[in-house]
Length: 360
Picture 1 (cartoon, helix red, strand yellow):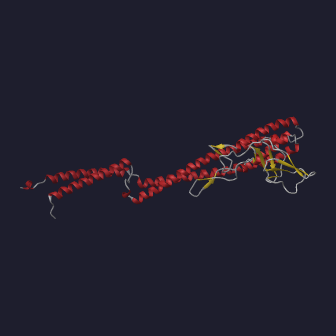
Picture 2: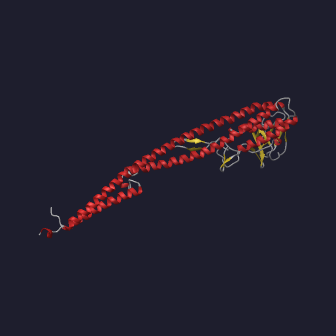
Picture 3: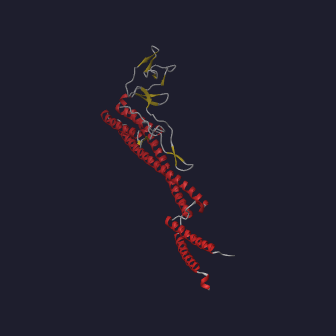
């Protein structure tokens, strides 16, 4: 094969450029710490890296959701713990005044304390986490419970409807939804007697539903304004977790029990006070059962977060194995390439110095 001078010089320059390019690439890898600079260098490896990074972003979002949920549940736990303490204090007062050794004056003082306890429980029931009411079910922008005082607690009514109930007995009462008046049946005249429009803040239990209705802002509303629904957050790809407790499942019994106890103490009603003991015990059990549910949820969240953290470490290690540079190997390769580059330059210099004149 005939090698012309033009081809010789072309090949020498090409060899030097290739050696320079290899050194440049190695230097760039060492500077960045990454083995892969472009998709063409390792398409499959880079595709896996992108998948792992997407999964890492998902895991980071799940961890943020878990942290938010833990904050919500921690707040709920503190509220329920304090509610149980308040119910325990109410039970102490009920025991103290459920015997004949107490008297009307002492019971009036106890009624005042029960009122304060009830207000504190009601405040817990209307607590917020951030800008959301915690115990209104999915209605997080509405205060769940309406406050009402014992002084405005009226006698029970049978129903709340636009028409009176059929076959009434003497003294039966109902709320007319057309005019919001309470009507009472008089058997002697067989007429429903209008009791008038109640004062704002008046309340009455509707026997047909068992709920306490409060007359407020010109209308009768149930004391509990939330719903019984829960909302969930995603703590994993297939792992939604409900984090809220609807107030009607947690506080309604406690609030009504405290209202009945306060009324019994205020009326010096020994039998009513004694009846409240069992009701307070039941209300405390409801709170404790919900505390157990919160504990189980926290345990699940903590376990899931631990699993996510391990998965994050694993995926980061996988990414590192694919794209991170082996510095020792890279530096050795760079040193070898420098030696090759210097040898190429030296051999090129020797070749280009040669001439036919040297052999004449």
